[in-house]
Structure formats: structure tokens, C-alpha cells
Length: 174
Image (cartoon, rainbow, N blue to C red):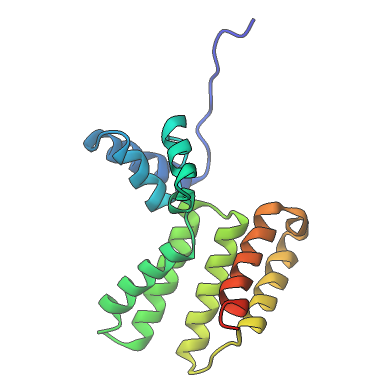
């Protein structure tokens, strides 16, 4: 007979930081607003009630609570606006720092890894005055993600992330 479950604290500093921040926010906001806010900020969907999750699904808004490239775009815009006034290099440096920190807090899911790589490579290449064609960027990021975790090729999250990315960057403009 199972009497209790004891979970040890993880050695992941960023997971503890995420948990601490979520607890702090939960003290100051009520549900369901806090759950939606944490989902939007950090991709934390575990706090959403079943009924609220079903409501989001019914209206086609489940993507709102998934940390993604849109979140990174907001962070990059903030970093460039704030630190780009100092210098172009400061804008790049803090933008990349924000991308890394966000990915560490949210976690390296296949879609977050793709978004972080796309954002980081685009920032770096843009700093050098160059640009990627969408197909080359997609191919390079897919190759990099598969180089580090080849099994991702069979992961549905990875496949959907790259399919949506291809749809947005390659097929939608056509």
C-alpha cells in the first residue's frame, strides 16, 4: 500500500528558479489568471484546471500557454530596445543572454530548442550584416537539433515544430 510520495529536489538550478518564481506569483494572483499567466510566461501548463484547459482547446487557444518563438521575439525586442541604445553589440549580447536564460528556465523541449537556435542564429547572422534564406535556416537548425539528439526525428513535438516553422517561413509566403 502506497502511503505517500516524496519527491527530492532536483539539482537543476533553473527548475528550482522556475518553481520559486511560480510560487511567488501564485501568492499574489488568483486562479485562473495566475495559471494562464504562468503558462504564457514560462510554458507551465500544469497549474491549469481541466475545465480551463478544455475551454482553451475549444476556442483554439492552447498555443497561448506554450513557450515558443513568439515569447523569444518579445524578449529580443525588449533587449534590443533597451540595450541596443548602448551599442549594437550590447543589443546582440543581451538578446542572446535572454534567449539562453529563457530556454534554461522553460526547458529544452524540441520546439524550444528550435526556437532558441533559430533566434540565436538569426541574431548572430543579422549582427554580421547577413541573412538566411528560410530553407537554409530550417535545414541548419534541423541538422543541429538532430546532431545533438538524433532520436528527436521520431518525436512528434519536433516534427510538428519544424512543420509549423516551415509552413510559416516557406509555404505561407508562396
